[in-house]
Each structure stands twice: as C-alpha cells, then as structure tokens.
Image (tube, rainbow, N blue to C red; front, side, top):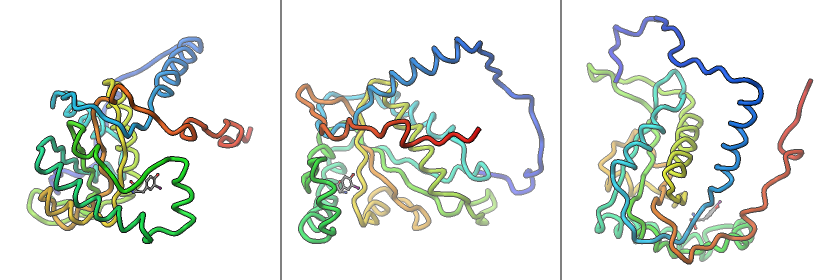
Amino acid sequence: MFIKKNLEYQKLPLPHKVSMSDFEMMSSIESFREYMLKRHTVRDFSKRSVDFAIIKKAIQIAGSAPSGANHQPWHFVVISNKDIKKTIREAAEIEENKFYSGGASDEWIKALEPIGTNANKPHLEIAPWLIIIFAERFGTFDDGSKYKNYYVPESVGIATGFLIAALHKAGLSVLTHTPNPMSFLNGLCKRPKSNKPVMILTVGHASEDATVPKVAKIKKDIKEILTVLD
Ligand code: IYR
C-alpha cells in the first residue's frame, strides 16, 4: 500500500470542519443514541438478498477507521456464494460441537446459557452475506519488503465497530461469530498466513419471527461504566 520513499510528514488543513451549537450537539448525539439503541444482535435471519453495493459501502466505512500508524491492518472477505457459506457452516459447526460438548469450561457454558446459543449455526447459510474479518500482522511495501503493523487487535476492533454501525445504518442485522480455531478460513478465503481470521459477521435482514435473548437488552447503568474526574 505505502511507497517506502514517500513516508515523510506533510500536513493538510482539516478537511471537514463541523461546528455545532451546544443544542445541536445534544440533539445530534441524542438521535444517534436512539438509533444505536435500535441495534440488536440477531441470530434469526431471512433469506432476503442484499445488494453487494450496500456491503461494499459498509466496508469503505470500516476502512475509514483510525488505526496504528494508519497502517489499516485489516482485510475483509465478503461471501455470498452458497457452497462456500455451506462449507463455512460445516467447518464452524465441527468446532462449535467440540466447544459445546466439553471443550469449553463449565463456567463459560453457564455464562452462555442466558444467551441461548448452541453448536447449530444455520444463519451462516441462510443470511445473504458473510464478512470474514482478517487482521494483518504485517503489510507489504510496493517493492515487496515487509513492514510491521501496530496495535492490530485494537485497530481491527475499531474498524469492526464502524462496520457494525454502518450495516445497522443500512437497516441490516449482524451477528458476530468467532469459531475457534478459525485457521480453516485462511485457505477458504485465500488469505496469506500473515492474516489472522478474527471474526465472521453474518449479515442480512432479520427474519419476521426473529427474537433476541432478554438478557442481551440489560445494559450496565452509566454509573457502572463511567468515572468522571473533574
Ligand atoms: N463461539 C461460540 C460460543 C460463544 C461464545 C461467546 I463469549 C458468545 O458471546 C457467544 C457464543 C458460538 O458462536 O456459539
């Protein structure tokens, strides 16, 4: 991505200046809060298709996230192909079966009980899109030499947050899925060993009869998550 010899510091005037009154700030953040509170993690998807153009725009938004040294240490593989989705479902369910039948600690299984998850992952086939998020441990200059990436998990986490928010803005539902181990995804997605599969996002429309676990809607009170030092 980068050209080694062009890496000196140059500055630009801030491209977009936003200036809001206190009132506008409050009304803007309040409407965003209300919008984000309408996002729910969904496990029941409909077969309704979603245009690739929507997915592509969401990935562009994810790609605009801040990252360590602006190295953008992420790669997204988007899949709508039925056969590949089936392969991913089968591979993920093999791992999940191991997890749910003894691989995970009792404490972990107990923690998941109120969420109602199990080893069956039909959504990986039903939903129109899967987005596989890869973290790039290092990048490659145009001349083929390698450079190290920094704060990779943090950067990929921020980009994933942008992506989930963007998909929500398009009216889509998302389920994060982290089968473990996920190395089978490298071969399937033709990504090099330097790319670590981090997460599968199932993306589509929620089904008519979709439900969410009651417990998932209990969020910590602001007093619990915020400390003010003034
Ligand atoms: N990967 C498993 C288990 C799982 C783990 C956590 I932590 C969750 O929040 C949900 C599920 C699965 O997808 O079922």
